[in-house]
Amino acid sequence: MRAGRRALLAAAGASVAGCGARAQPGDAARNPPPGLWQIARERGCTFGAAVQADLLASDPLYAQAYEREAGLLVPEYEGKWAAVQPVEGQFDFRGLDAVVQWGRARGRATRGHCLVWHNAMPDWLTSALGEGRGRAEALLEAHIAAVLTQTRAVIRDWDVVNEAVANPPGSDVPQTTPGEMRDTPWLRALGPTYVDTAFRIARRVDPTLRLTLNDYGVEEDTPAAEEKRRRLLALVRRLIRARVPVDAVGLQAHLQMDKPFNPSLFGTFVRALRAEGVAVLVTELDIREGRQIEDDYPRRDRLVAERAHAFVSAAIDAGVRSFITWGLVDKYSWTVTDKDVRRGDDRHHRGLPLDWEYNRKQMWRAMARAFRGEAPDPDGWFR
Ligand code: 9MR
Image (cartoon, rainbow, N blue to C red):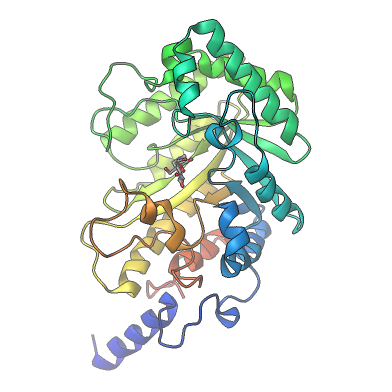
């Protein structure tokens, strides 16, 4: 490559990364309208992001970024059991309400996450589930009824059951006990049909709510993901045959650059789910970088952007119309803050559309191009 061309590319790389010398946090000139949600809407798609109520209230640049980019909100924590029913029978909707009201003031809907999960369970619930089947069923009924009654006017889509399928051998955290359903306090209390029960209660409480089954680890081209796809599809088929009211399947899409992505395998899976009559949503997209990351932000961001473009394009081709990233701004991503997932060195994953300074980076542009049905730029950069 000629030296002049190299210099030009390096300069372009610096500017697309949003880390040039004069970058201001949340710089309006760098982030003009339309936002990602408006670009998605042109294609008939929804784009939104998981959000934290505390940050909406305390960080104006964060709130501005959501106002600009997110057409749909999902509470990252505020809808979970530990937040909503921290003490048995005492419900606390303040966090959830803060997200919903912030969105409503700006014309943005909120989707609910999540009614039944093995994490973010208050301690009292974990021990109560050990007190027998009748008690477990009563708690499930009471929680779902209270939450859906409270939110029915404002939330029209809930993740009813989150992460019900067991991680096969070869997964990052494989399940050590046998069985295709994840070994959780819910499974131990009620058996595999706890999923059926939860969806049936939800449908009875709110007959027109969209009910979603959400799971992860099914997007990539690895033997473990292949097996988890088989298990999730088998579960969905069983539920549909049993007339359990599942309307949608959420694929979390916490992608990893260390794992290969095969658009056609993924597309085949999405189509197989849709053939069962359910909608397929991308509910928690983010991208963890590979082990070998360096300090070269433009190059790193470009790899993440390529993956985001391939993934979103494949999902749209297969009929997905709803896309949610798990956060919007790198510095608040769970891949940076979660001690089990963050990198062990002083480098941080850059796997969301906006960089540390709340500015758009290549992943944002890659998603915009995918929503517009455009290929990557011929030179490989996402400007
Ligand atoms: O990102 C969320 C983190 O802030 C919470 O501490 C954690 C426990 O509630 O949940 C994280 O979100 C998870 C989501 O609810 C379900 N899929 C995996 C997400 C990342 O762990």
